[in-house]
Length: 180
Ligand SMILES: Cc1cc2nc3c(=O)[nH]c(=O)nc-3n(C[C@H](O)[C@H](O)[C@H](O)COP(=O)(O)O)c2cc1C
Image (cartoon, rainbow, N blue to C red):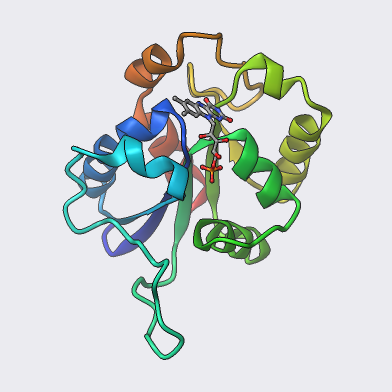
């Protein structure tokens, strides 16, 4: 299938260093990907070949048209503590968060890959947010093996190694299962 639009929202953690691989893998499957980074994700995007997929909307003017077509699906890779909790709570104070809240509200097929260490994942808000997102239909995919039944915390000092082993096909397979 072709002409499918995929938003890849990415946050500030080591797994953002694999977004370029996601753009290439998505294109191979017929998606047209757009990368929507949080400000904190930008350092991890330096040096990655995102071709023309990068969408930076901070300075869009009120009369400027939207630069991206409507998404058929959304991948949030990685979804970190700050963004995951804000998203689940309906906090839309940045462009990436507005994108995520709108995707949830419109039940756009979405796969999220949470990425946080155990000190953060032990916070009760983390579990509550995961429950809210699952209730709303978001597929939650473990960054270590792609399974969707449980999400393991990132062990301290292993973030880059987990990012290196991460496979985009885990996310794209999930999306092919739930989207058009
Ligand atoms: C080197 C580095 C690694 C980080 N790794 C993580 C992480 O794995 N998970 C997480 O929740 N936050 C992590 N952070 C913290 C976030 O980047 C920070 O909370 C940021 O404000 C999140 O903003 P965002 O949600 O808008 O991307 C990391 C920060 C740095 C500098």
